[in-house]
Image (cartoon, rainbow, N blue to C red; front, side, top):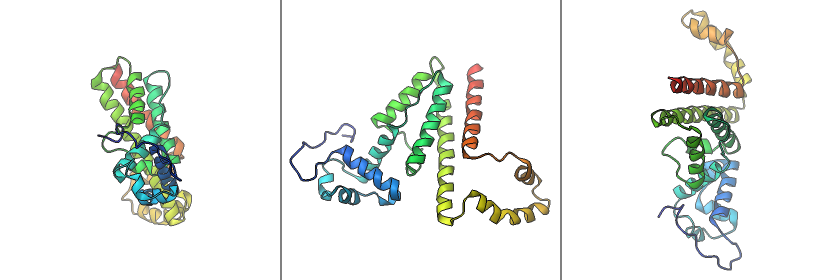
Length: 226
């Protein structure tokens, strides 16, 4: 029986009351502070002041715990809006904001579909908003938005981690590598790249994300119109 359907143990008098919700929230707190490496059933039990074996009555494996953590974040993702375009935009923004609050979330999405109740609710809201658009368009359209968002969010998370590791923010990194690029461009071997770096738009993270998302939505709209 999957963890979503498996009953929790009965409450019993203990110095430290437990529930799946308390366990999951404690695990999220550890992951938010120190990443997924900080999450294990033993460490979560220690954070709750409980014995590790007690947690196994609620959660059988670390994989189940990670699934529950992801679904708890999906509870923060509530796509809404008037029409399919607004709802897909809302989905993208909500996922991005959730990953900003829970950086580890970006590491756990993008593989097999998430099947927890809150993830299913988010998916239902998106698919219901597609109205009478045919499934042959709906399925790849939603997949395209998800692929774009996951890729964009992971790039942003990677950038933040690089800043922490290197101690250089984006502008400092650009200044450090600028002389090397100028020498490379001076060879004449990379004229297209040189044009982009020197003359192209320099968008901030919000502008980059939203502009790319609109490109994807424009493509979906064109396909629906055909």
